[in-house]
Length: 160
Image 1 (cartoon, rainbow, N blue to C red):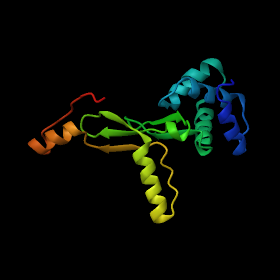
Image 2: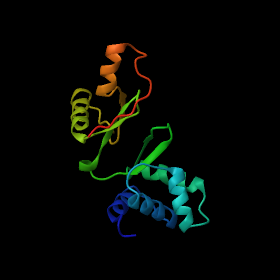
Image 3: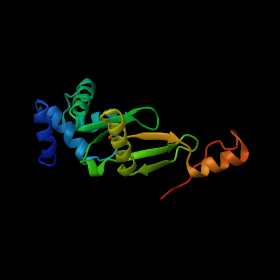
Image 4: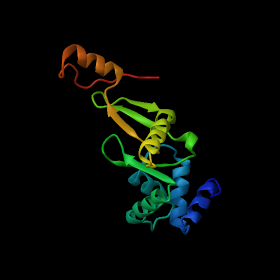
């Protein structure tokens, strides 16, 4: 359980005691990078700790989110997904097409510029660590403009 040592320091700063359950959940998030639901985490961790209950997983994820170790957001199906936060250089965001459900990764640069602009204009320090921005991808926007609002149902296409 040494792979998440940097996170332990952050938890200590927030006064969070590391229990066996919390350590296993943190370890699971570390070894399963990307977006995970609480149920996925529970399924994996409960195999290692059979007495674990779902409420503990949900409470731990909430605690880790408050300590800014984990980020949470509504995933593709409206289900909350969790991800271990890396350093600022690894923050990433998503552009999601509301028509074809294509997701495009958005690097942190434009969002960091937005955060700076918000702070400069309003003195507000925004928590924009993980965003999903909905809209139309280039292909759907083009098809929509050519054929009106019902020109496209559901399509799938890839982006680099």
